[in-house]
Figure 1 (cartoon, rainbow, N blue to C red):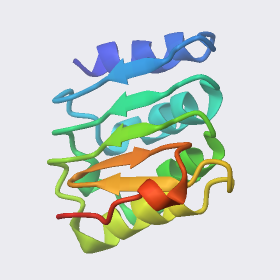
Figure 2 (cartoon, rainbow, N blue to C red):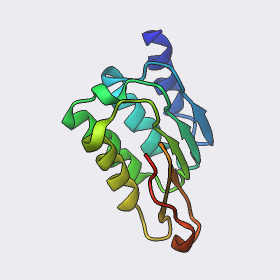
Figure 3 (tube, helix red, strand yellow):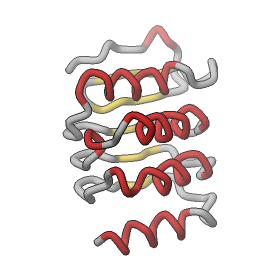
Figure 4 (tube, one colour):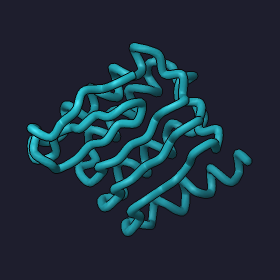
Length: 130
């Protein structure tokens, strides 16, 4: 299983056309921090990333910071699902902060346990409902 994720991170380095990636339930965790950050920051058309039911809650502070930095750098992502990761308040705040600090033409739109970042007007934004 670990080899499969490492292969995905490697393959994605040369795939600038990746628009959607569903990693739900794939045990993405601390050992995947660099690969996840790489794919998020370099796939310039990545629109939808599903990380539901993984191990993001086990990331340490530095690993979470690395992932959040990549999220801030990606201007194409409009949907991010991090539900069921046991992120806790600090982890969820970090992810929300990464969305809020993105370029102004990509205001965050937050819904339920999944984060939705959209280019829609801020007037359509909804509060986080956890």
